[in-house]
Length: 494
Image 1: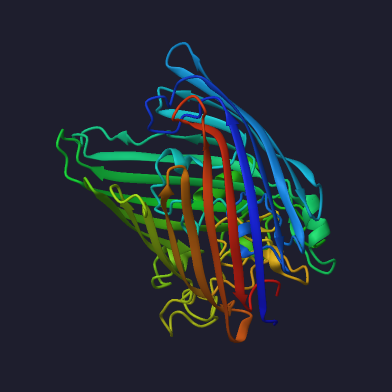
Image 2 (image 1 turned 45 degrees about the vertical axis):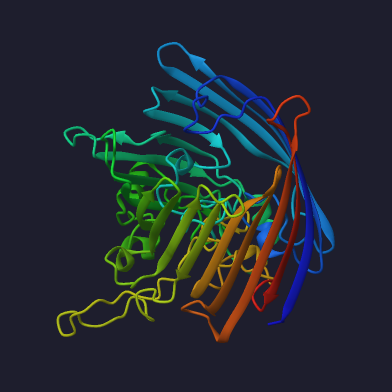
């Protein structure tokens, strides 16, 4: 392991034309067309600094060596239809360098149909998620957070078909106190060319992986005209990888019939055509979270406390893995212009239901639980784990496979303790600032622990200028951001 210090500077320009309506605004459902271009480039000593490459939806290359970056161009349109229907569509292309494969690629191509703001159907790949429409009920806000444990903004969007609720809806017979929301999605990976180039020839992996994810959220909130300033949100989310074709000949094509899909949705064991492991346990690779969030909204400030409990299998579902998960606190200051928002988070994945997995013993003679060594984000058959194009689709703090210098496909640092701090605010007029700081202490994985703990500290500081319009007080659409970022430690590139 080497001791590495990398520095970089980034200049970003963004330009948008048209009306961009955000969820919750009074203009949210007006028709609009948005054209945009984002240019981002930087220089680094070594690899791209961690917080420059992370949470860019996989656009920024992880190793720009000396200089590199990306340009994204796109268009989005939203329109109205008769009978309480509305629709939207978008397309964006990215040109990035350096890259292992394809310097120009389609980043987003999607269409969606929404009825009465109660139910929506979306198809394609899209940055962001339906959690965004629901106000991030699982807790982490991607602007400042270290990242959602299940689905963050770190990797490229996976193409999928998704049925979801665009907002929380009141549950009947609860007097408006209880609300529900959620989604149900199926998707497919298209990173085979990347995997062929990035993964070492002696390693196996599954191509054309199928995905399934679903979530259910319940929210308790006072519906009265003068409501209590408190709300509580509870959620459960599930992600599964299945199907595809393994490069290991004895595994080959994995089960992917409609009956197998039902097994994936219900978390059942595989049939006779599944691997022995999937017949004993469940078909595919499954993981998820229990989500808890408590919010207080006052006149001068708002506070949100949240906890995501991660589970990889039955032991985690039954909470045998202690408090493994992400705990965070977000503070919004409404009347203090220089600091608008603060985020503090702690992530621990150390327990993993104990040190051993599937202990062989006589359960009649030695009662107890035999699960352990959950090996988060990894799987013995779906060896790329919870990643897409080499990037973690969840928290980037569990260092992504793209940083494995020897071309290994999985996660080598999934037993960690980490602290994360984020803050943003105003400077003067159109000038704003933002920062992220993370410290990671890694103990490797349950199956490949490090000889000693490895540490990493990453920081990013942004200063942004929004160019005012010459004829009005509104922004013109041009934004310029200067960024300084640095890493110090033993993790990246190993």
